[in-house]
Amino acid sequence: MGDHLWPLLRLKGETEEEKKEAYSKVFVSTYVRDEDGEPIVLTDWNGRRVRFSKHNAEHVLSKDTDYRFRGGHHDKPFDPGRARRILWIKEVFHGVIIRLDFITNRNGYTF
Image (cartoon, rainbow, N blue to C red; front, side):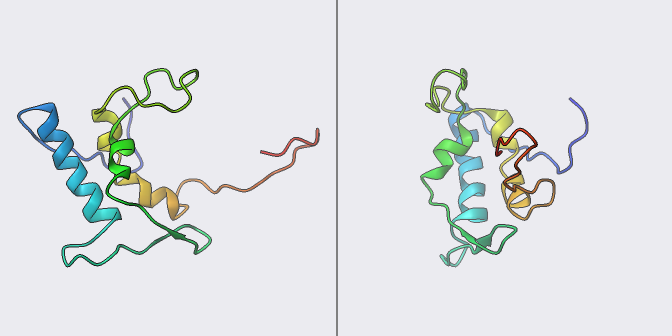
């Protein structure tokens, strides 16, 4: 795999469940509540507030092995590749690498 714009997080654990728990703690402390229990304030590139709950960790750390046809149901409860990228979420919301705009092309399609 090539270089990444942001570093990958690599946490250790004896079992897959221990690894999932370690990544879940990082997710919660980065996106949900700080050490004092205060909500994390995260905004997107337009200044709109983005909120996560601890339950979002299940989605962030899991994977849909057939995302094209399964409709978003994550059947793999822990995916190390997705877990390593959890710190990237805030970078994307800040618009560091992408900016989502609605663009209408010459054929009239909006994307």
